[in-house]
Image 1 (cartoon, one colour):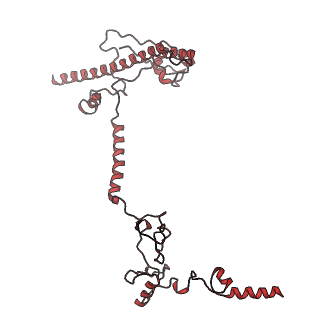
Image 2 (tube, rainbow over the protein chains, first blue to last red):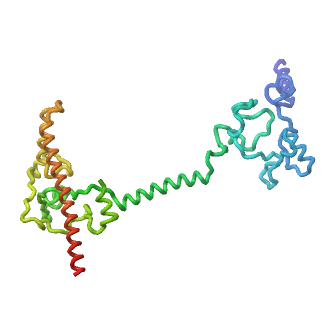
Image 3 (cartoon, rainbow over the protein chains, first blue to last red):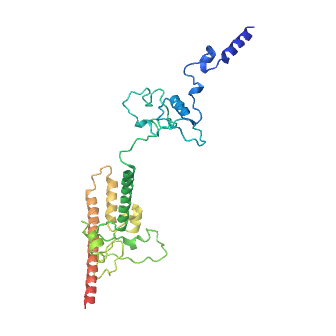
Length: 188
Length: 122
């Protein structure tokens, strides 16, 4: 008897809409639950739809720009500039300082890529062309110098070192049966 | 320091000798008679001392004496000054001979060039 009553009570509780513990306990939803009108929707075609989408994403209508409607599935999600969080002001008091983002701000589609531990789009100290010129210039110069060093080797002004026993014929692995070529060295 | 390199690559490219090439001149040219270099250590002695190839030159007997002195006097590493000096002096004389050979080769090349120039002019 008590078991049946308990079952009915549990069913009544879980019938309530909503997420998490709040659904089981009281049947009402928490404010952190996502409602359908705050989820992304289909591509906005009319200016009214565009205005509604901009308001939904907490953006100005002038700033709001959706992705192109070419079947990729972006819907009305805004196209934000591809700038990483490294480029945001480090001294401003953000709501989330490590993410450099305020509450309610529209998130870039690739936000998780643009966090400060990952891809950095901040400008380099010198331009790309300068960097390329410096790197390949240096490498090219080193290759040229090594090539010249092979072509024109540096050496001391001395003749080759003289070794005894026909230039160490046997020691260098010469055949003991064959006659070695006679090599004589003289004093000077 | 480096004058020979300037001569070889810039000013006198045809007469400056290349130390890697064998000399085209007769070793007796310019000498009444030349004494042969004397090798003191035998091949067997060098083998027993296990000398590396580069050290089996005309000063090997001094090196073998030095090695024996060091082995006998270990751990006194300051003991073999005399033997070390003997070996060093022999190597130094060998190096000076190499310098002289280079210079001889160079002078013979210049003489050859002069002779050819005279023959052409005549």
